[in-house]
Length: 218
Ligand SMILES: C[S@@+](CC[C@H](N)C(=O)[O-])C[C@H]1O[C@@H](n2cnc3c(N)ncnc32)[C@H](O)[C@@H]1O
Image (cartoon, rainbow, N blue to C red; front, top):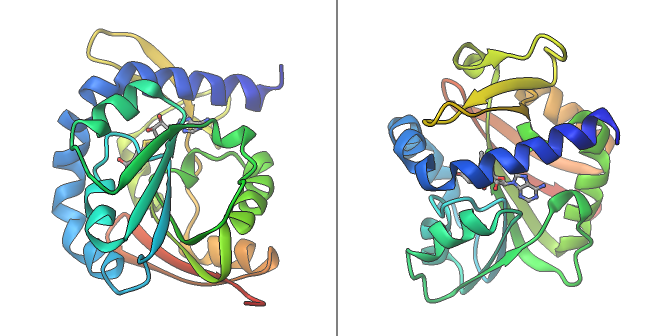
């Protein structure tokens, strides 16, 4: 098994185990930065049929559900999907899907993901974006939220792979290695432009970026 594969497996194990305690830490972390993020999220692109990737406990799904006609939310963790399902959002369907083994079987008007791209290692970056490209209908849009380098201070570096991995510990003391790659708006813009995307990426709050991308040829 490659290093990247063992790390992404450990990462999924971590989120499966963290599902029931995720909101306890994530909500107080995210809520203070939420207003400028919601301004972009509500700017009018996330309408019609929307696909959400790595939907987690449904923190963003609740907002997407209000903007879109229908939301399809994918996550690799059944435990996360169980948490998100508790919101009982009528126009949302959840599906368990490993995003590193994902070939979209249809396209959507818009694709959204939050706090996912930093968990995609560099050697999976291009393949992930190729799948996203297949999931966006002509004229459609991709929007995502992520962290910037500002948030590195919150993480415990993994000394064996300090540029790729961090260590996270659960309430019960279990510790996991996960992927965490901090990419600046400028780096993301450069890399996504090279892959054929046209993006506007801004740090909308210290530590948080919002990206709006379209296929450059659309
Ligand atoms: C940082 S959480 C983000 C959740 C949500 N988007 C949010 O912002 O709160 C990362 C999510 O990715 C999911 N995940 C981890 N590995 C995955 C994989 N290989 N395929 C699909 N989802 C995965 C986890 O289950 C978790 O819900």
